[in-house]
Length: 365
Image 1 (cartoon, helix red, strand yellow):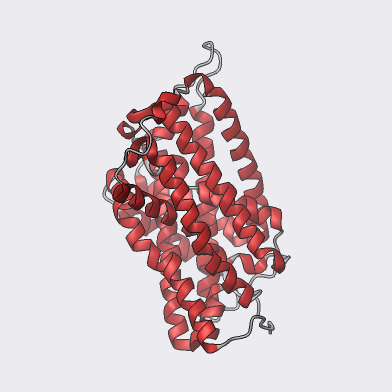
Image 2 (cartoon, helix red, strand yellow):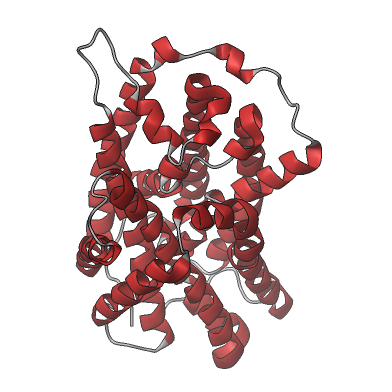
């Protein structure tokens, strides 16, 4: 029995994938550790991701209409398949907790610093639980509106920052030692591009299953362009001083001042960060709830969302002692931690399907 009866369109899927990819990068600005070569590292990461997600598209084409949890059990049986599914579900659950604290740390530190972290986190997770409870179609429709707003904001800020651009900030070019640049590229691939592995739980509900590969590559490519341009814009405005700020993207928007009339755009920036964070956490929470329901053979995934959301909030409060620890984990540890889940598990399942000679098309019950 299908737990999700909703269907989503190609345009909506591409848009929420763009928003999902932009997600945490909107505030964390990955790659600033390699200075003016950060955009090069992001380009390398996007190129690597475009190659790796090919595995995901092959897997979905081989098992159309089935989620990653269902595919695991078919390929490896009820025991080994459940173990792989548990690893996958832990990853998307933990990733949700990290994304949640990324955005709510920003809210707590930059907007309401005197509010206890527990209050901010639990108030932040409630709308995500509600949206996930409403189902996939509602998530996608809401996400389309939020992502369109984000893209409009993105274009507006790009235009208003033109007077602050200094193209000399790109010089010298490619001075980062290759090992360090390659590591930055690998980190960029794992965060944020390969985090789209969660869409193995969403793309089976695309109403045009023959367009799955199109949706994946369009979403990944345009999401990557948004991330790369946001980093290039940051370099143009702040240059080497970007590393001095906890939230450099927010500060770069904050200094916009056109004729003493157009300023205070950080309000729009804060709204954008909150909305795009809400979208990403909601997608991860929905995927976790649906996955656990399928794993446990539940009749409905919705009753699981409240306890999962509460646990996600609790874990987020205990992930890191402070914001600096979060940044250190993202830049130094995260790629080692995430790659076995985001790239290794789909590859393992695809190889298992190939070895067992499972057919390319599987009839749904």
